Length: 401
Image (cartoon, rainbow, N blue to C red; front, side, top):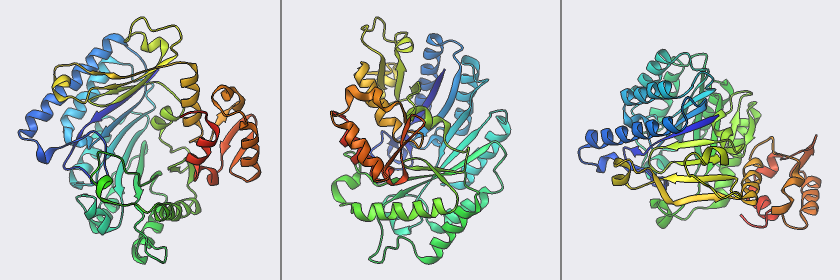
C-alpha cells in the first residue's frame, strides 16, 4: 500500500518563521493562470504515477502546503475524483487537509462541502494552523488574523464537525514569555484551558520554534530556547492534565484520534510526494518501478520533486540531485531516528546494534534508571521526560545521523 502527500505551495504571504517551499500569491501576477498551470501539472503527475502503480491501494492522503485551499475548492475536488478513478481508495483510512483560519468563511464552506460530497471516507482530518493566541506574535510572524477572529472561528467550528471528522489544532511555542513565566494573559489562558478541557479538539500539534535558512526570522531574530521550551512545557501540562495522551514528541491525542498519515512517516511506511518540492519514500520493490535497475544493496529510496517552476510545468517532476539510495544501515538509522519519536518506540532495540555506539547498552540502562526511557515486552520507548530531550538522547546513541 501507498500513502500520498500532495503539496500545494501557495500562501497569501510567507510567514516570517517559514522556510518551506511556498510561493506567496500576493507576489504573483496572473494568479489564476499560474495556479491553473500548477494544478494541470499536478494532475499530470498523478496520471504519470497511476500508470506505474495502476490500481494501487491507497492507505492515507494528505494535502499540505502552503495553504492547500488556495488551489481552489473545485480543483481539490477534481484531484480527489482523479485519485478515485486511478487508484484504489476503498480502504483509505484517512484524508487530511491543512487549513488556515483565514478567511474563515471559505474554510467553513470547504469543510461543509467536503463533508457532504465525500462523506464515505472513513476519516476526514482537518488540521487548523492556529499557531498562537498572542496578537503580537501573530502580527510579527505575518499571520492574517488576531485572537478575537480565532475565537469566533473556533466557536463557529462546532456547527461543522461530523462523526467521521478529526479536528487537529496546530500551535507553535514561540517563547513569548514574560519574567513571571506567562505567555498569555489570564483571560486567554482561561479560554485555552476551557477549550482544551472541553474535548472538542481531537488532537493538538505543539511545535517548538526552530528557525532555518530561508525564513525571514532566521537572520533577524534571536530565539530564547529556554523560554521556547518553557512555553511548550506549559502547553503540554494543560493538555496532559486534560486527558490528552502524548503519542509523538509534538503531538497529543484523545485516544484513537492520532494522525494516521503522520504515523506512516514515523513507522517508515511508503509514501509518494505529489507536487513541487514534495518528498517520497519507497522500499526497493516499489522504487525499482520508477528508478530501474537499482543496485542490489539498495533497500529503499528517498527522493524529492523539483522546485523549479519551469521544469514542473513541463512535467519534469524529479530533482535528480536529491535522490538518496538507502542501504541497510541508512535504513536502520532512519528507523531508529523516527521510531523513538513515538510513544510505541522500537521493537528489539538490539537489532540497531550496527548503527549504535559501542556502549549503547550502558547508555540505555542509565536512561532507564533515570526515568527517561523504558523497555516493556521487548519494546523500548521514551517516556514523556525523555521525549522532551529527544535530540540529546538520539545523539548519544547513534554513530552518525
